[in-house]
Length: 269
Picture 1 (cartoon, rainbow, N blue to C red):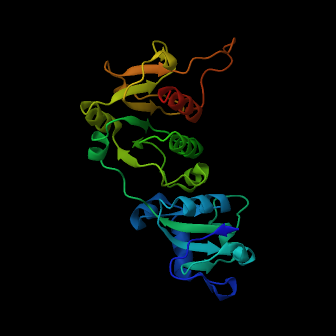
Picture 2 (cartoon, helix red, strand yellow):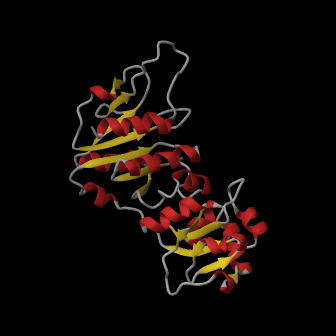
Picture 3 (cartoon, helix red, strand yellow):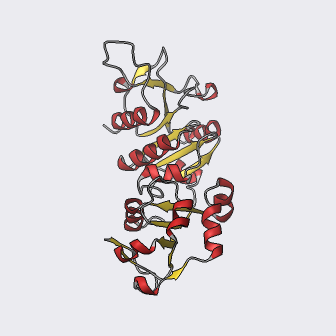
């Protein structure tokens, strides 16, 4: 059973009202980025993801929707509604909907000042990561390693895209984020004592395991196809790679999320 924290009172499944036309319209709209940004809301679906979000409490859950067949599996709160299974299937972003989804409030981004004032830690930056699955895995992994924040550079897929949210498996909202021009944001953080490492598998990069760990590190992962943007490669930034043990050249590079995961392990040890 998934336990939903009571907002005002606990409801029984047979007392639930059906979702209104306006609520259904909103669910449909939130599949698009412009409406997520306009309403400052996004959708989380799936039993495990909903359970984790409710457990960690970092996000404000506005509304819970359940299919009638699944309603008895939940402890329901006052903002819970029944959603017809056909409509749930329509608004769902998965092939096999699990009969539960929530609308959550998009959290406020962390400020550059807050990041500048940190005494130590690791910040990751995504340079035009476009695959939702990659970004979701990056967010989940970064949360696991206790990363301070994620900088979402221009061209990076929306953090609250349904496919990204699904890939985080409930980690959405746990990692402070800031969206902006990486050249500008990283430059400001470097002035505050942060050291930048660029994950770059090209010639001239140094194996990351040979790099001395710094007290304040920014680890940048580049676009899946093009790697790190040229404008981010400067003399004061070290290009690092994940060394390969493969005896052949059959594998040119690692998946961006995998490379970032190994990089995080390295800079945290």
